[in-house]
Length: 524
Image (spheres, rainbow, N blue to C red):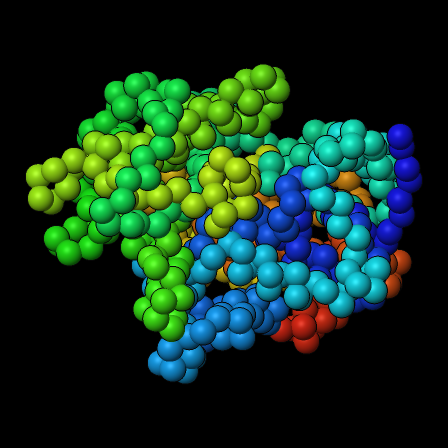
């Protein structure tokens, strides 16, 4: 059964960028249809189970007002709904999980609840309609415009034909791009193409992209045995050793990303090494009244469960399904290895008290609803951000390239995980940067904006533009941009390329709490 649905804006993908885009568009008085492949909006923050990766100044500045409202909403959610210790309740910058990776480590379910609260006025009023369990299947195009996108509703098999003046692609993999014939690139560009110091030599490698990860949650109950059944591929993963890795992948020896030199980890803190369990700990019982929680909870998104044996982009469906299954098998194998074979400081082996927590990620098998995607298809944009624009070593001035069409800011190291081309980490210093509007606008198609990891960046610069607050800012700016275009009867390219119009739009962004420039800061 097919049905037609219309809105001012169709947003494909309800992840971090898509949710922020929907919020901005609805605030602007526009009607929105947003699709989401899983049952949780929020992407990295929720269905992919990744606590926010942020920059050192995040508590003071360097993100949009609405992203700050989200962060404060997470803290307030715990204060409003949980019995907390007086000290924790009074802590302004509460870190609910006390994790190392971020100043705000929290449960995916909490992030989901806060996002629902932020969207509630617009969902309840009908301005935002969310189609869960739906994927884009076909696009109708007229010249340089997308007229409609057909999505399949996975639970019923029905189709919905979504029509709108504007479309925003906020999917994790850039799903709209091939469907609508929008020009895009994938994988690693060559030095000849981009001139980037860290691009690949020789020909570009379109299937060479960063690995993805199936995250999962665990807690630890000393003296109990929660060992899972031996995973089907355990023997394979137990023996697997990458050429660029100092030991087997399932070990406590990995590499330091910035140097690719060997580094040894420990599971729990106390013996002088980096403690993996505390790394992404999302729940710390010490913040709550005694007896509220029996144990802490941690998310496993470690070097040992990055999957890079193959791409899931632009490959046959069967091949993508195989890689997704093998990635889940890797994460399950890591857990089984931790429970049965991981070396303990006392000379023993295994931590059987590690317990898989499917409830934390909302699934039956305990794996996150969706893999953590680091790299997407990327539009051929009006402007593409290169390593030379943001890398510390490429910027003798000590500041990143200034973009006249800035629609926001971000900051993170250029951080590329091992790739499907069997290449190791690329982790280099970068400078606090701006997000140019030109990177959201396809070169040719006029009524589509990119709003996730699919913007005009390269394999290299994706490494610093892919993080939570940056994706939020990208999505939010996209939502405001298409709303502005509808209000003024112009196209995104007209906004960018008319000095007076761009200044007016940037003033609109500033009034909505989007910072467009950094103060003078150090590299990261």
